[in-house]
Length: 329
Ligand code: SF4
Image 1 (cartoon, rainbow, N blue to C red):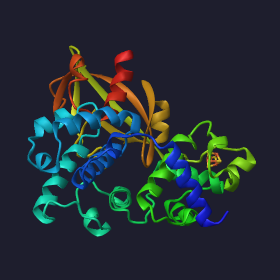
Image 2 (image 1 turned 90 degrees about the vertical axis):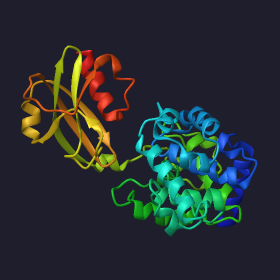
Image 3 (image 1 turned 90 degrees about the horizontal axis):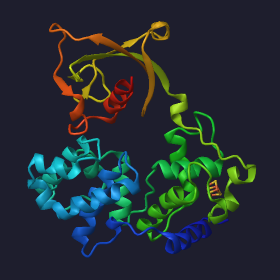
Image 4 (image 1 turned 135 degrees about the horizontal axis):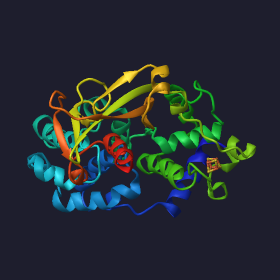
């Protein structure tokens, strides 16, 4: 299949199958840029289906960039509540402020300027360039990665590295409809090339797909090659209250509330007593022993959190996961 045929097939599929998403329905260019910015922040770490009601509520309460730049933090957090990863909301507001102070209220349309904005990394910058400004780039999200891994049957650590996946994107070529094209490829990943049971009979790329030919759809993730690290989390409780600390010790989840914890050696982990859980972070597989300890005044923490208030306080899902396990036993 020639590159023009690939882009035509992909766009034909998109025109007939694309989802109606609230950030795709805008009346003006200003709305369009704002909706794309908000949705791209929300979609970092969260699936489309979860984001939709939060996005609709957010836009209702904070309908434009100006309002966002002036909103007080309490109201902002209320509009984001339940979506998690709250640093995204704080960064979104900071970004809105900078757009007014440094860019005359206009969302930048180039990689360099976009990358200087808080909360905008390489992926989000490219997504904004493609989706908002019709620039011919294809952002590499989890969906596009999966499609590429399957088309080229990529299995080894080298093959699935970001560098290699970025090179493989040339397979798609380009289209004048860059915005639609980037969204179309991501949409194929989300709706057809699903993580489990891909719908190959509906896929416009099946003729080119090695996984389809081999009938092997297993996806290798870089987590598989992640380092395993071992930790002990100390659970201090007193009268249904649990001790949490603000994390300024580890690079992950910095400044967020976690249970006190330390890294341990593998043999210490294996010989430790207590419930054990596994948590995957983006670059590490954590194996954690939960050791219960008696609370006493000598123990220092930042926060005693009542069991009944766990859902009312903004906590990283990491801490919630540990709490769920602890509260079951
Ligand atoms: S043919 Fe199947 S496995 Fe290959 S890209 Fe399409 S949906 Fe994914």
